[in-house]
Length: 305
Image 1 (cartoon, rainbow, N blue to C red):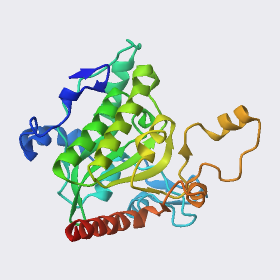
Image 2: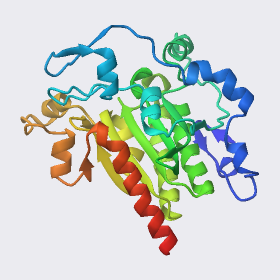
Image 3: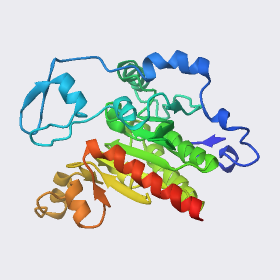
Image 4: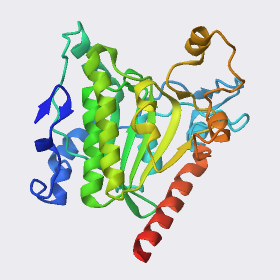
């Protein structure tokens, strides 16, 4: 049962309610029906890729091979949720989680439903996070990828429910969970109910931790607002991409509030690593290998125990 976007005890996955592992995934028929929009390649908009860091221009095909990282200045461009999931998962191993979600417009916000539907058609995502089970170099995990292309990755009722469900499935299946965050914060069209997702997702992360699960959080640009203040920063291992903006409020808002100039690079991944907030800053082309290494170490430890 759901009450104002918050899970009640009866709706959680328990020993009594979970039937089989297969029940967690969409059926083959549903997968085929959704494949065109959920895993479709993004439309090509330009023949060349222009780096926003150094203004260098290179063929789009070459930029994609380099995972949209500029080979000249190292600037990491934004990556869609679908492309990032493809970069992470071993080919042919990704299966979407089955999510019984209903569209929510609790404040009757004008034009909200139409905007959501338009973004679904444009991005190929059903919401601002793509969730499923996949393998990373042969290691099975639950993976969630937030997409800033879908309402800036804002967290509303559905996003909170997907993240919570993912933690619960990972717990039940005994798998690690990896979450790539990219968000502007809470979804204002859902008001206070969007803020309540902070508590819900944080509680889900705590339950997963208490049961001994491994949670890896990958902070990408930008990870701000309610997402950074909840599940994104509650992981066992927190890593970030170079140059990612990570924080609650933006630098300009903070400066206006405290009346002081912030240090150079404040809220960037490298600054946060230096001050112990992030465990490591890892370039995108090394990220998959490092995650696989962490998973190998985790599995060795579990076998030893």
